[in-house]
Length: 274
Ligand SMILES: [Zn+2]
Image (cartoon, protein in one colour):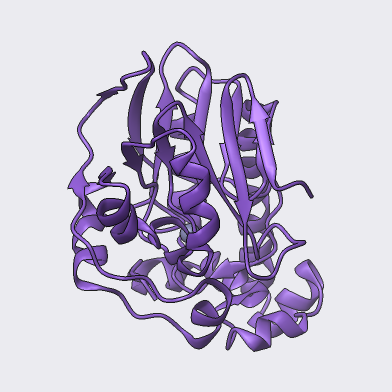
């Protein structure tokens, strides 16, 4: 896995304390002087150097999770950048949000800051136009950024994998399916995922994920109707939980994805930060 990414003028830097896997590393993208996401707090030294190279003056955050918003405060202070984020995420990074021990270990602890709410469209100094698209499901404030006329979609954590096997405890599968279909209404080819990297056949990838989640949800419901427990369904459909799930206290686990597919989960669940 290479640290540096370059595709048609979009550059990216993959950072992470525990390198080597998609989920323990995260990518900060930049187009000209604009950055998309800020990386985790414990990678500030690398993020700062990367964004300083192009005198980054504008930052768009996709959602409040610490590996995406984690250096917002420092970018405002040290690079005097204007930092935007989805309006429903502003209070979360201004007031702070709870983090589990594993999140502090893997990504570090962010400082609070006050970003601006992102406008309906941003005309960048380099001639690009970026349009935010509300994409709830991974988190309530998850927002993708469409580079109008370029065919690029910056998806934050709305994609990650065509066939995900793990969910955070607060993810909403129905919203994710709706979001993926809504994104496919827009014109784009290439997806820039904050963990997977550049996905050239981005439309196909998003469609595959929507189909997979739809099929998975149906199978989970069928098994649930037959009286199978969450544990049994998880083992049958997704296999055993790895050690990693236990290390997160099952906050990031296979059973969360199965639970998210159950009807009562949808009706009682509130999709909030951890
Ligand atoms: Zn996230």
